[in-house]
Length: 75
Image 1 (cartoon, rainbow, N blue to C red):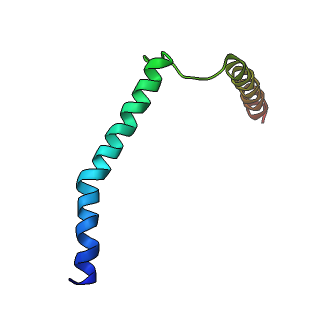
Image 2 (cartoon, one colour; image 1 turned 30 degrees about the horizontal axis):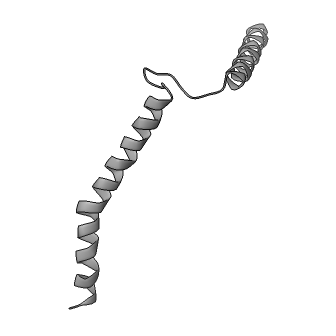
């Protein structure tokens, strides 16, 4: 048996049987954890403090954009 056959057969078995099962079970566990945390319908698992920080950063960036627009309009 050559090296190519000894390498090719386990690779085909892995890619045709093991890899799909691995992917399926991975996503099943992800779905179960999302279900446990009630993260369906577009909700995300982010703490409220982080959301508040992101909102403040977004407001600051919006203020910067409006300031830049004003400066560019004057030129």
